[in-house]
Length: 470
Ligand SMILES: [Zn+2]
Image 1 (cartoon, rainbow, N blue to C red):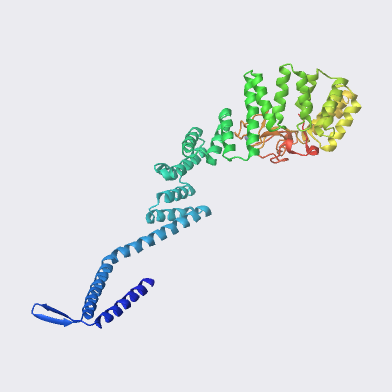
Image 2: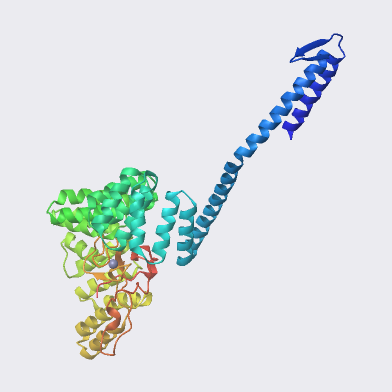
């Protein structure tokens, strides 16, 4: 528009100039091939100008005609691209919607229409996976490895496949390759960490936790927790190798990160006792009782004080538990010590108080012992033992992921390889198979813990904590 306007302005100026020149005095005579032309300078200039204009117009039209086929091709290609991207978008939507056939169709269409392998390959791989064709997906992912811009994506796809197939060695290999490309990618760091945890590579896992924290791939609290749990596992390994000093160093570091890590406290108390540091062990138990009361802690405390079964033992347990006297575990520890001291009235009082907080197998067994010891009442004792089989099971080291119970705590569940999933918690309840079977006390994988889904004993309010060995 502006261009044609400018053109007319120029033309107008030229015409005005030509007429102005034509009106100037003076004449021009041209003799050529027997012709004689007499005219003014202005008219001649106008004639020359018109000749040039006509020539230029013919040239312009000729050029447009010559370019026409190319313009048509351009417009066809633009159309292809548009349709290609539309197919790509529809394919992605189909993947998100779980429509495998549509995703495959659109992936094929996008591949034909677009020259964008990074985009179409990923869609094709996803479509193949959605359709359950893992072999085809693998071929696409492997093809993606050949190009710089798609290698990282391809590695991720192959990693997922290796993890699904349970091929940890291959998964580690892919993760290492991905780390070479982008060391700070969250899925790379977390994937490596997960594998290291499952394989029990404690040192490697500590490295990965540090990297994850720096790259913000893990929230600070989660990173600290992982680090602490790994330190306790490292302490266990050091203890197994009879390196108590190293174990203690790890445990103290862990305690700085999380102060209520029960397995760490129990291990530290045991090592202190083994090292002859009884006073330190006793102090540790007293400090830890409020947050992590546990029957084993009470046992270790008595050993640290050199107290056995008697009134002195009960006094020691009362002292240990005085930070949480109303806690069910405190009451059970006192009841046990009172029974050992043959103080029947005290034992009965503590058991009744514990029962009020929450019934459980341990209370029934201690009541049976009390009836038998105090009165020699075998029938009452047997009744309590019967009740014990029906009573709610007491907490144990239970994996929160698969529900398996373990004799000892470990950082990684032996059954399902979940990290930091084992905690002191109630086993999942399974329906009793028959009247003679003590069903409720047996933990049954693979159900999740029924009574406290996902919660650890440490995380529960004091009144709900029921910690006791059977
Ligand atoms: Zn498990």
